[in-house]
Length: 242
Image 1 (tube, one colour):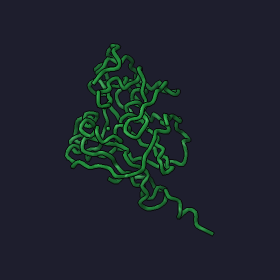
Image 2 (tube, helix red, strand yellow):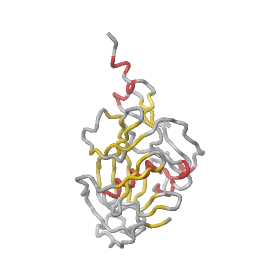
Image 3 (spheres, one colour):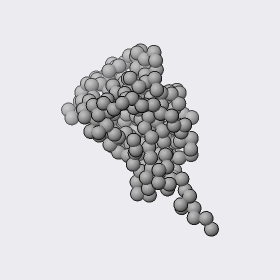
Image 4 (cartoon, helix red, strand yellow):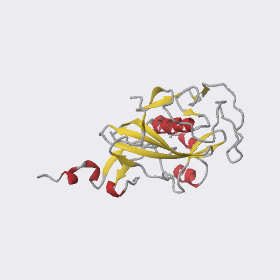
């Protein structure tokens, strides 16, 4: 009898589960390699305003009180994301990205770069999802660093040499989960469904800064929490535009 456990692709030592998970100024795509998935995944080694509403500064003294850079109204200190947000989808690079007049992106430039999201868990979800989509478009390379929180992680990724991805694996958004949200910081998990048939959860840490969400990186420029392979969407909210 064939040993099915050894032949399962997710248990192969260097199985590549994803390409274009995240892109920054000097990095077009990151290939995520799963080494012994049973023990956990580790990565190898993202204008014209469309909204004009104004927003009152949030009352939470612990949060950045700066209003939305493009005037998107709405602020929440706790997550109100309990159901599927009303969404339209647009292809960005090779990935379908979510759009909403309420949640963002509130600014889409002539070349398609997207920024400015609502100061809510919904806005954070839309930022994270659009960031991943922007990472699949090599023409966005020079702008993506502006979506990263200033600091050591920002400087580390900016110092890396430019690269380009030749990987053929593509992914689409399949679901999400908000792990934490306090009005200032949040962790959003976006589930990607790859053309290889693999599901992977990508945890994205964000902070509200100067009127928009910003990506948090570790001091070495990597993602603070490693992506992980999934067997199914259990525990996540299905959400897809493809």
